Image (cartoon, rainbow, N blue to C red; front, side):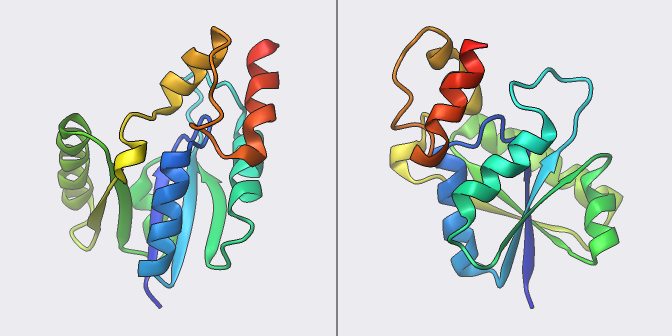
Length: 159
């Protein structure tokens, strides 16, 4: 069984993230969406909320599992005996960052491979950061996040 881990903070999950998960689920037998716990970063949604939102929008994809983790990604992979990381790439900036991360992960564990999936053109402009900023200023985010969680994001921003 070929399993890939798709790591990130997903704060919140966007249509771009969901696109990578859906497409990845057709390439791999299983996708584990690994939501990073980063206590040093201020998140809009706490870790349990992020996991639940992702589960909500991926409930129709049978081969997707959503979990949280902290620490090094390579340790998470080793604990689960997985050696593939799936990453989404929108821009050349993403590529440069992900290439550095892939090299670091390879340095830490030579068995790990990073597979980069290019973003679909309609999602190139979407990031969790710009979703939060647009929502904060009462802009429409309905084409940026899955419809199942649109109200969750709007309600959280208004708090």
